[in-house]
Image 1 (cartoon, rainbow, N blue to C red):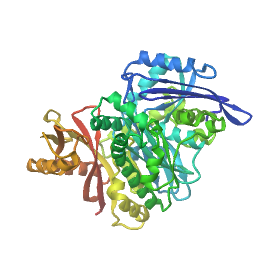
Image 2 (image 1 turned 90 degrees about the vertical axis):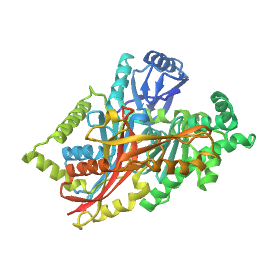
Image 3 (image 1 turned 45 degrees about the horizontal axis):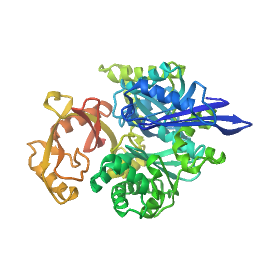
Image 4 (image 1 turned 30 degrees about the horizontal axis):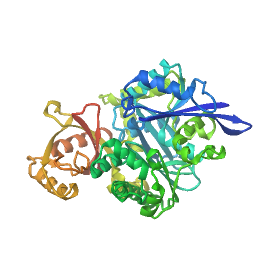
Length: 558
């Protein structure tokens, strides 16, 4: 797709910008120039541009001050912020699927887990594995409004984005110069989120995101040590997991213990599902720079844990202690050199690109078809064909959004595995789909197509610890439920350290939940019986008074 002799990767995070220029000489990828600068708070927040003027100045500074020479090119490869980027891994168990049919199947299936509407999303996909029996597809959805925001920003700077990429794919590309030969876990510890991803020689196999990251470490350390956020950040970077300051080490270890648990759950799920051991764990991201971080994780996980390094930068003898800062930028730039490096993962092209126009038309067509209410022949055929295949479409993992957990990992892996094995032979085979429905947190937003919900706030003046009062608070909230309400078992508020504190709980209508999820299933499976509805995740929306409930709907044919 891309056959450049030089390529520029641009990585913009909330607190820093990195740019890398790579060149190809005699078949070898070489480092040409590298630049970096810090970003002040308030310029980029949660992937959205808050101050375009200051951001433009910072980007120009990175290009102008790059070493050993300024980066002067105007064509770049950019990594979209993870805060509004969603990934679904989809398996299609059908021998032959045409390209148009594949596009539509992927589009329909992806939106069973991506918590956005068709109109709000730009979707791209790539085939991970394809053989005589099935295809495995990686789909990426990005918030359209955010995408246009970045497109407009780069156009105003007269920078042409050749392709938009996802952070997790760029990281793997920057680390391995392709894909790892053995099953490998990447833990990307950023400022606000950490990603746990597993790759094999065919690409992305699993991904999960959590908010246990650098900011949480600093805030908890500040609370434990009774210091300011800035003082805690300095102490965190100075001591890390060194024994020089046991209080700092213990505070960090307590918070990081939750991330260790998430990694253990993820690896256990992957190894059980694929019956293959994950060989290595690679730490990347700003928080991985904490002193003795690799030793801490290696001890707690009892596995081989190493700090990430780029094969490209390693060959250039680039300082190892700085390589981790540029791994994503390297991966972005590598996308410009064509071959498998540019086509193995989903490519999100600018809207003025021909493929970008095709993607936009596909989204429009799919949305129009989904909106048809008549029972005409064409619509019946489309739905029936989609349904025949959708029962053997299994979503392996869900959106890249901090704090959301996988229903598969918690409950449904065995159901889906059995479904995948038996969907073509047993007429009574149980099936499971992940569906979503809107939930209103305030009476002003109640409508027939939303689950009615309300927040129960428990104000706690004192207590032994958050963990000690949590179960009591849950029981108290349970006692306040009205007739027909259920309690979401995980609090809406994050864990807290100090009293007084407020723990908020969600109460929601069981009748609305049952009615709306049955209605959602009826749209794609009108002749099937629901066996169970298992709410599994809460997803935010642009309206703070409305959330989206994700549930696993288990059903069988009548």
